[in-house]
Length: 357
Ligand code: NAD
Image (cartoon, rainbow, N blue to C red; front, side, top):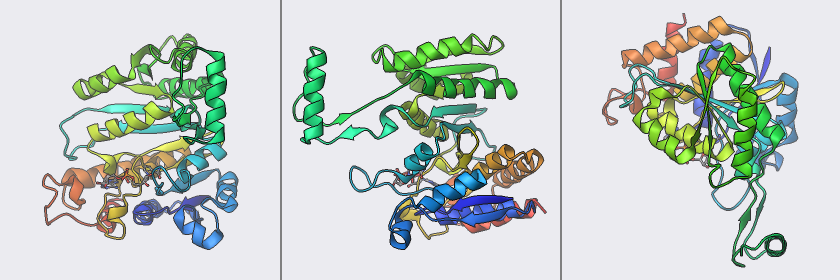
């Protein structure tokens, strides 16, 4: 079968190469259709997200994607967000499961995050300070209610819909049921954002009624952050609106040892794009240094999604074995980050491939 491969920027090409090397070692006959997006694509195609990238994913239905750089506060908007929105990949699924041998204070973590991927402050509806649009919106809002907005404000819009909330919360409960998980925790700040987060919570309570076999609870995002670093073992499946999901994903990645080991998937109705939680880490580009685990484990999620469940397990076991042995691992998986015995991205992937033979 054909799978779309987007190498990405920064460390993207190195970690996607490591992942395809491991997946190819399983001899499933996967043919990678490589397409380019991000800063590299501007030079080649004059666009950060050439139509052929989206066409390739629409045709193949599955993609493995490296991270891409998004300049902060200026330049183009995130290609990563654009892909998720263009293909309506509404569920960002990020498992955070402890791996024996990864240096971390926390043990026995097994949390799966369902982050809504298309709405909220991530919708990209923003108005620049001083622009006629921002001025006009400020005037309009002041007509509708009594609170003042300072005239020198920039404005971001936070849309949260019933339908958008229903499909991500349904997905979290379906996952919990299929994977025999016990509890879904819905995360919000409905005490302050009564209409947007309040709606997310209300929909959650309604959806939960259809899943009496699964415990449902809600948590306010600030309190959840504290609880997660105190007793992370209390959490099972988390479902969150987009922005909290983004932040809590990194927190959970930290619990299991850092971004180098945290995989992810963006899943829509009939297609999915698999990518690590981490970004393009530009300072490590072309150094053959970073950890390929997050990208390889994103490949494990991909194999599971396409129905290659045995092979997915085999690859996951190989990754876990190499990390547990602690020899052929990258610097971030050593107790001492300056340990000279740390290997490179490629060498760690090769060690994983050897376990698959
Ligand atoms: P980042 O995840 O790229 O890197 C932060 C730090 O995490 C790195 O400096 C490094 O110390 C560590 N790290 C990340 N990946 C690692 C790996 N595989 N192995 C070992 N250590 C690793 O986050 P950032 O610096 O905030 O973002 C850099 C760029 O990536 C930005 O342009 C950002 O917008 C983009 N980004 C893209 C995605 C995506 O493509 N989905 C996600 C997040 C950030």
